[in-house]
Image (cartoon, rainbow over all chains, first blue to last red; front, side, top):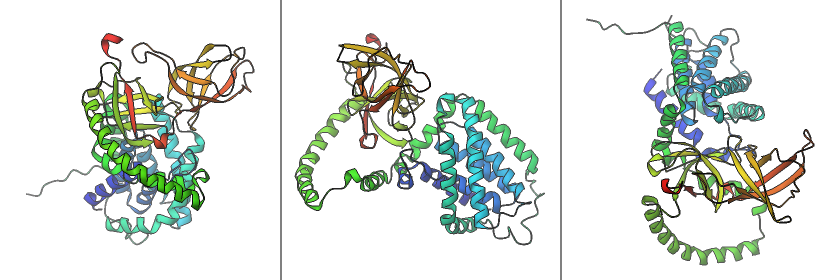
Length: 174
Length: 268
C-alpha cells in the first residue's frame, strides 16, 4: 500500500464529496447524493489485507467526519464496519460487482445508523438525517458502484491495492 | 544496528483506533468543530468549484425555466443590456461591501458574509466570532430571516436554515383580518418547508398569512419576515391544533450573500 498516494486520494475524494460539483449528481429536493467515501470503504475493505483495511477504514471515517460537522461518529462507524467487511470477506468472497454493490448498500445503511446514534450522543442538534435519506444515499451509492468500479479499481492499483486479493497470498502480516 | 519498527497486532490496532474514536467523540463539539471549519477554510476554493454549473443544470431541468425561442431571444437582448449596467454596479457594491465587511455599521448591526459552502439545510459563511458572530444570531438573506448561526469559529460559521429541523425560532403570525398577531414556534421539516408547532385551532389562521421572526432580547430588535403560510389545516393527530406549513421567503439557490444581525452590547 502506497500511503502517501492514499492520503492524497482520500483528501481529493473528501473535498469532492462535499464540493458543489457533487450537486450535479444530487436527486430530488432532499439533494440525495452518492457517498464516494462509502464506496471507497467497501472497495478497500474487500481488496486490502485485513491489517491495511483496518487503518484505511478509520482513515476514511476521519475524512467523512471532516466533511461533516461532528468529529468522531463516522470515524468509529467506518472503522468498525470496514473491519467487519474485511473479516466477512473471508467467508463471502464479494468477488462479483453485484455482490459488492449489495455490500455498499448494506454498509451504507449500517454506517449511517451507527453514525446517527453516535452523533445523537455528541451533538443532538446535528442529527437531522432520516431513514429514507439513509436508504436513498446507500442505494444511490450502490448503483453508482456499477459505473465507478473500473476507475476505482484503476486508482486502487495505482495505490498498490488489489493485485493479489483473489490470488495466492497478500502479504506476511499476522 | 537495525531499527525496530513498531507494528501493533491487528487487535491492538483496532482497539487503539476505536478508543481514539471515542476520545474524539467525547471531546466537546466546540473544540472539534474547529477542525471541521479548518477543512472548509483550507479547501474553500475547491469546494465551490462547479456551484454555478450545478445551479444551471438544475435550472435547465426545471420546466419553470423553459421558455419559447422568441421569448428567449427577447430575454437575451434584455440580459445583454442589463449586463453592462450590472457590471458597473457590481464594482460599486464591491467597494461598499468591503467597507461594511471590515467595519459594520454600528446602527444597523449587520455583518455581511459570503456563502462558502452549501449543505442540506445549512451553509457555511466566511465570517466568524472575530466579526462578532455568536451562536443563535439571526441571518438575513433576500431581506428575510433565513436561519440562525449554529456554530462560530474565529473566521467562519455554520448557519442552520429555518427549513432545518435543528432550527427552532419564535415567530409571530400576522393576521390582518383581525388586526392581530399570533405567537408560535417555527421548526423546519428538512424538506424545504417549515412548520409552526402547537398553535391552537381557536386562532383564526389562514393560508397566505405572513410569518415574522419574533423579537428576541440581544438577537433581534423588531420582527422580520420569514415567509408565508402555504398550508393551514387541522392536525390529523391532534384535532385541537393547526398543522401550519410555511414557505420561506427566500430561494436558497439564489442566495450568495447574507447578513448577520449583530446587536451591539449597549443595545442589548
